[in-house]
Image 1 (tube, one colour):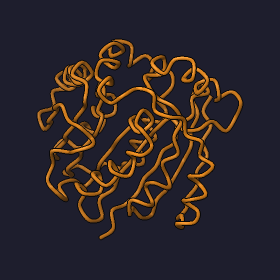
Image 2 (cartoon, rainbow, N blue to C red; image 1 turned 45 degrees about the vertical axis):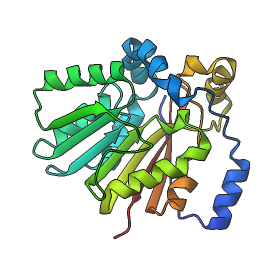
Image 3 (cartoon, rainbow, N blue to C red; image 1 turned 90 degrees about the vertical axis):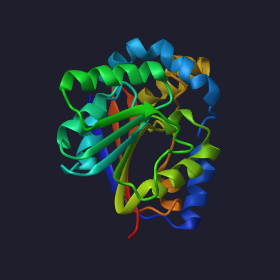
Image 4 (cartoon, helix red, strand yellow; image 1 turned 180 degrees about the vertical axis):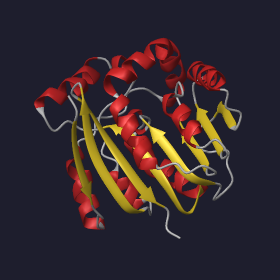
Amino acid sequence: MLSLHRTDSILTVDTIQLYDSVSQILEAKIPKSDVPDVYRRIARLYDLWALLTESKARIRCLDLADVHDGETVLEVAVGTGLLFADIVEKNPSGRNVGIDLTKAMLERARARIVKSGATNVSLSIGDAYALDCADQAFDLVVNTYMFDLLPEQDFADILAEFRRVLKPGGRVVLANMTKPDRWCQAFWEWLYTINPRLMGGCRGVLLQPYLCSAGFVEVRHETLSQLGFPSELLIGIRPM
């Protein structure tokens, strides 16, 4: 069952501090060095997981991204290329760049793009903490289901990287597992507490205050639930 709640807001510093104090984001349990191995093991099953729990959020993410043909687009943590393939289809004469930390996931993304016949694509190993991209290189940065496996103290640095590579007026679109607000959604965080690897290291996060604090404006936030799996979607603009 799909449920959707949309909010538009601009947060003050005081609100951000309050938001942080009650967020109760669980500690990230899988070290960054272990992430490639975890996702190498689940790469073959990832598309099924994504279909059951993340597919509706990805469709909405693509809507929010509003890709225009001819743009320069970067997807960070491209995974198996589920969203990236749709971006490439909408941007046939633009530049489409995808990076991921895990070779096994990237290989599946490449295979998906080869089937599409697209050639305006660059896929490579890359690190969200230090993007190998020039300043102000992209119109759009997209990132899904990555922050929810990273330490909360790293959010600001990574969002600063996203802001750095965006052109003035460029937009960032994010999707993540978020904190449950109904009892049926709490199952997924309970499973994380039992064994984080069963969730691919993902737990619920609340990214909106960090996006505002990173200097993005016109920040919009939505939540969406699929099979009780709660996702948040956000869009922000780099100021001119």
